View (cartoon, rainbow, N blue to C red):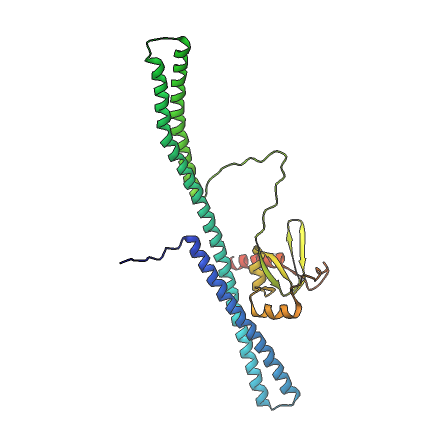
Amino acid sequence: MAFFFRRALSLVERFESALEDKQAAREKLADRLSAAETALGEKRAAAERFAMADAADAQLDRAEVAIRAAEDRVKTLKAALAQVDEQIADAERELVDAKAQRARDMTASELEKMAAAIEHAAPRYDAAAIALIEAITKSPASLQEATSFANHLDAVRREVDSAAALICSELRAAAVRTRAGNSNFAFCEPPDSKPSPPDIKRELIYTLDPLLWREGSKVRRVPPFAQIELPKTLLAVALRHQHVDYLSAARVRNLMQIYGNGKSGSAPHADDPRLVDLDALAAQEKSAAQANVA
């Protein structure tokens, strides 16, 4: 009888699966929020029509109760969406850390393999050197140059043996430091080379408001209702304040049918009062969090 066992997921695969689950849950929650906001707008419009039609107070009361219930539903869904966004941000950080640890483990394993290969090859080198020395010293014939060569070869053999033991010890120590994330390997750059700017991790997103942020000395400004690549460091705060949304969200699909993807739109002017500064928004959240801790 054949038995089939499911392969155990690695740590990175588990984090990737958890992140995908949270993103799927976020998409469903965003769709519910979009539907709740639509329902709220409809209830407000209905209440206004009742008021303009001089409806009875009881009918207006029922309309206002329905509006308050719809507003509460929207607030609840927004709060839940903010919590899911925080969970997604945490899951992304955990995934990045897990991938970094996997890379460190792979590097450490290669260092350990190198040490094992050196230990395996060193005895063969030592045996070959001894055989060469004995071929010279055990011969009944004698020559000063051959004797000097044998003495020099024996000294080199001893140095190689000592150096091999030392480098194996250093490689294993480096492997331990690498796994722990404490490696201090130094990579020297050419003296004339200029440091390259760090790669910014981005995510494709859809804007709901005109936005600006800074990347070094450059200020990026993007129009509303546009498909952009936003730095992941600002993604969570932009999602929490409903300035962007994922392309898969229902309301984004509706907005893209109306406004398009914004590729032909021009960047807003610097003095546009509608511009939302994501850097300032993130700084305000950080200050508020520090104040709450204090």
